[in-house]
Length: 198
Image (tube, rainbow, N blue to C red; front, side, top):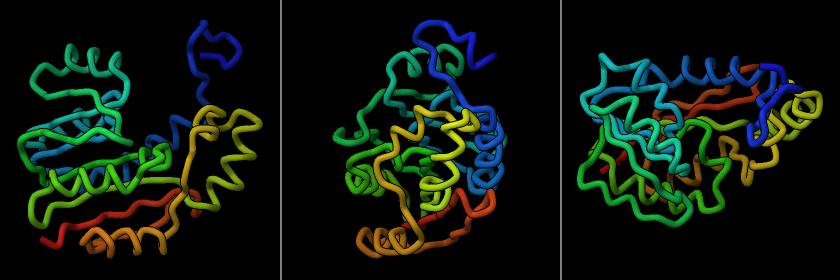
């Protein structure tokens, strides 16, 4: 689809946005297993990608239209809508893996969603988070979105950008240990895997 032939109401994506999404999936995929909770699930890509390693899948998204569509597409999975900045995650079960792929940088109350996620996590369960790095957001994303390599809407929606130190503080405050941290895409994105200490 051309950036210049969008229908009314459609959000333009950047030329490199699909590539970035595929790269994120590549780094997240090895950690997806067991009972999975996908926060900001969108089109439930990980349910399709990792189905053989998933025992159960629950997807939560902020957009009720996305949730309604995913319920029809994947009737054997569970989907619901939530405002991650303020809603409690009352799911009635715990999970081996919680995904927050491209989510936390869009939230005003990251600590709230992290506390809610921890309540849903099994002992020794993991939370997998990807976000842009400060370098990726402040330089490459800003410049790239101005020339439509990346989505301008995504850039404008970024609230807080984490670095490794900030993840270390978050992990200590909430009782996680950092199982894995690395940057990818030439230091522009990062993945952190937090493990529940309890």
